[in-house]
Amino acid sequence: MIDLKDVTIRYGDAAVVNNVTLSVEYGQSFALVGESGSGKSTILKVLAGQLSNWSGRIRLGEHELAHGRDKALVRLCQMVFQDPYGSLHPRKSVDAILSEPLAIHGIGQRDQRVQDAMAAVGLARKFRFRLPHQLSGGQRQRVAIARALMLDPPVLLLDEPTSALDVSVQAEVLNLLKALQEDRGLTYFMVTHDLPVVSFLCDRLAILRQGRVVEEATVDQLKQQAFRSPYGQELLSHSH
Ligand SMILES: Nc1ncnc2c1ncn2[C@@H]1O[C@H](COP(=O)(O)OP(=O)(O)OP(=O)(O)O)[C@@H](O)[C@H]1O
Image (cartoon, rainbow, N blue to C red; front, side, top):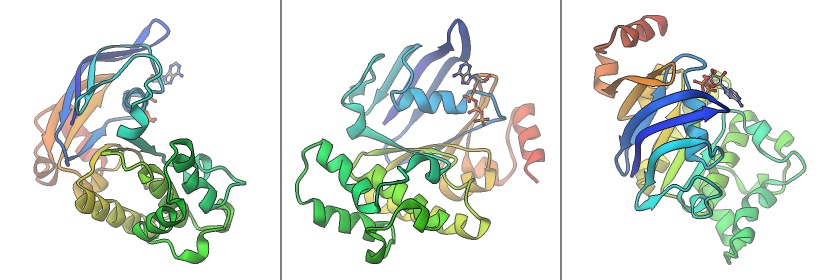
């Protein structure tokens, strides 16, 4: 479903991601882990169509990613950000936030679709006309997830989706993401520092260091603490 082949990404002249080759199967949940500055968010931004200075090949399903503006992309993948407060417009109600993608793409039955989307992420109807600041952090992240799903994309890009939340609501949001994936057969590509989150949600992971993949592993290897690379072992020892 997601294939990167020899992907190199530059900011100006500096390559911050080098020759990354990865693939994620349809319906799988994949995590990119690694220390701060290793290039995780940069890869996510390229997949989201936000950066054009890259080389190599990227495919999402049958679609070959373009280097410039790629109109097909919004229907294929959507991003959920770490901080829902930053990513939701402060003066737009939940209703406006969820209706907007439908309006832009000329999709009808908006009222019903907004209601269905709220129900799918476990948001009660009474929140429909509230503003983001009138919601809790967990509710805001539910709105962000609902918004990402409004156009029914097969892929969600998840950028540390629970790390800005209180510990008490992290598990709720993770359970929601897992249930949505199972119900809809979504493919997840997640960036995180949080190895327990990877254990819970993902099937496979890649460890990135200084813009290169040093190891690919299954979640069973993670659970058994059986990474092969010294750097993978080092990450495990830091996560306790
Ligand atoms: N807009 C930019 N211009 C120039 N360099 C950048 C820019 N954004 C990121 N970088 C550099 O690219 C490298 C990779 O950054 P990136 O944000 O992808 O890392 P990361 O693994 O996602 O880190 P974190 O976990 O802290 O988000 C870093 O060296 C960073 O300083």
